[in-house]
Image (tube, rainbow, N blue to C red; front, side, top):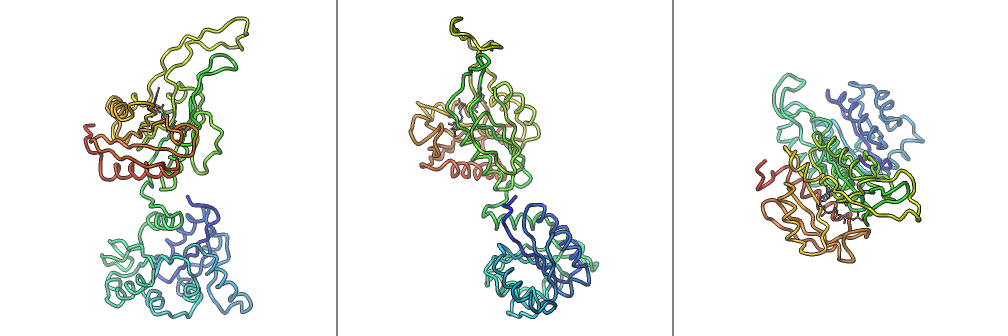
Amino acid sequence: MVSKAKSIVVGVTGGIACYKAADLVSSLTKAGMDVHVIMTEAATKFIKPLTFQTLSNNRVIVDMFAEPDYWDVKHISLATKADLFLIAPATANFLGKAANGIADDMLTTTILATKAPIVAVPAMNNNMYLNKMVQDNIQKLKAYGFQFVEPGEGRLACGTVGKGRYPDNEVIINKVEELLNGKPQDMQGKRVLVTAGGTREPIDAVRYITNKSSGKMGYKVAAAAKARGADVTLISAPTSLEPLPGIYTIKVETAAKMHQKCLELFPQSDVIIKAAAVSDFKPNKAAENKIKKEQGLTINLEKNPDILAEMGKMKKNQILVGFAAETEELHKNALKKIHNKNLDLIVANDVSHPQAGFDVDTNIATLFFRDGKKVDLPLLTKAELGERIIEEVSKLLYDGVKGRTN
Ligand code: PMT
């Protein structure tokens, strides 16, 4: 999902696919965008402006001469206000006019006045689409900077079969989000589970064992996955970080609770990234009340479950990513963890370095893959490292994991 502030102008031109643009406008509005619709006269023969007005919560513009003292300001203001123009469906007539700089209606006029990116979604009869004149216009528009969402192939409204079908709105929305937030939407439809922060293991009612994890690394990984379109769930141990918009966050305190939630969500996840610093040990008994000084305090520890190793055993098609917080023999220990925990990727950070690891905004990491590939990364902000990790995860999802036996 993109930020609420984004304004998008949807140009609807007169083709039978107009009715699909209604669903498109509805989805863009629901995604938090400020959607303005400009229709051509021909489009109004297929669908009423009122439909788009209701779905966008904004006035629909058709006739640029209808309100003489209003239109001029409006078309210029929409042209400057828009973060993106989307023409869906785009007819051959519209493409021809736009390719030749013709501005004889509100849509073509506003388009000439805008500096925002323009995406066209051609939809028409396949012979029309493949006609050299239309193809030349498309090439011309590409040269002018227009972007296109290719029409699909299949049975067309006119009864013929071929290329020219209005594509799925989901494909169009992916393109819009990619252009608006500058990130490819290749994680769309993927469910990503991220853990963050340091668990707290209670000693008594007021004391606990924890570690120095601030949660920053895990939160940045979660945000990076979200920015590429993933459906992200974050299991967060206590942190002082602000909740991330659009990310379902489950707050936990102890390793036991994190363990329970991770195992619950594991089967329905495509990717699991464990950036949390899970306490390896916990007091074997937590006192219900505060232990008085006079009583003295001896803490007997017992082992917490190794959540990542358990998920490694359960793994089917999931991509499993761990972190390795090391202070010595970084590479040797990281490699051991990748094999012992059956991981696809491990992010090894040398937490003894002052600009890496716990509670700082930067990190220095080496990525180790199952097939022995290793990528040494320079000093990066945690946001940059989060993005880099998601980029690698995306490659693993789409190119497959090399060296994986299950
Ligand atoms: O939160 P920040 O302040 O931003 O700091 C980031 C970080 C240093 C916490 C992070 O970059 C990091 O290294 N996280 C992993 C810390 C850790 O527990 O490392 P480990 O080497 O002990 O564990 C290896 C992996 O097993 C980790 O993915 C960990 O989540 C997982 N694990 C560990 C123990 C356990 N009982 N269960 C687990 O799942």
